[in-house]
Image 1 (spheres, one colour):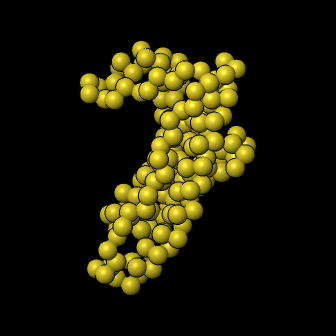
Image 2 (cartoon, rainbow, N blue to C red):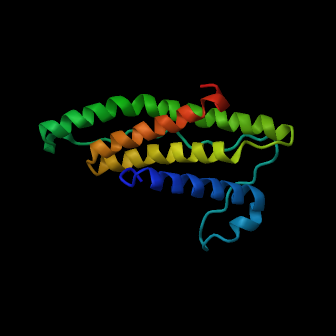
Length: 159
């Protein structure tokens, strides 16, 4: 997605929204359509907090085999990763708290906001994989998109 351009990003937005909507609307029936062996989602009672993924950790990279340019890129990515990861985790916690409060009233979070939160987490996880593959420029882009997705949720989570 990072190299696919804006049309690809719009397609991913539509897919994420459709997936979140189907998961909400069809619940257990929808999960039955997944391939065998796929983990079943946890059952959540109204008002119960949704499980929040643990904070994403920065992978350890041996920098002795990297060129000077790669070491500089790695240092930049590491400096950006730590605060971005903390902000993304805090946003996920706040989204979970919001969902619990809304659930107590018989309401749910907006599907688009839920999809944005999932994309935000996905970009951060992509950054980890890109760092491991020594693709530091793309990892930086993934961190930018994770933070941008989090910013889109500011009016929802107040962060």
